[in-house]
Image (cartoon, rainbow, N blue to C red; front, side):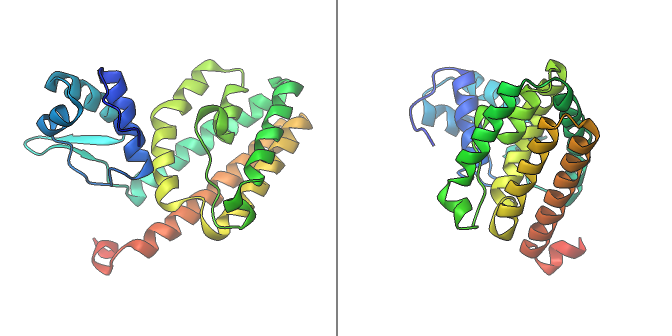
Length: 227
């Protein structure tokens, strides 16, 4: 995490968001306004504004008399997130197959080639993507031709998705199959086959959900599983 001192609520929001997604601020971590203001050299109102931004992005929750805390992932929320994601990203692929330029498709193929060349993916241990232009799903959303759909995805939904990915997602045996599925989706888009592109994306997201649910279940204690 960048330890430089933020001077605005926007900068502090970006700093805290990065730390949450990367795991520097773990699930359930308390975000005390006064301590954060002192640490970053900003007014308490700036901290409050930044935390509001994190709440709006679904990364932090506020509780009466308990302050703000980093969200604790739950299987129920995960399923809700992935059901919405399946619908929206299925539509993204349907539209992309109809509207995405050949140049944009080749750009995504180049991105996947870069992903494949990462040491972690070559070794089959992890498939870790960057954000925005470095993320396969963000690039597809940008290429769908529907700015409203892109905004819906590239806000709270993708931030929450990255949080789950970092903790439970593209690691271990799921890494290579996930990359292969990305490649198949791009092939369907390049073939201008909207039905196939949508079907492959929906199947890809369901497989990702199953993987994360299994990993979450494996990390839960017996008491948590029965609660």
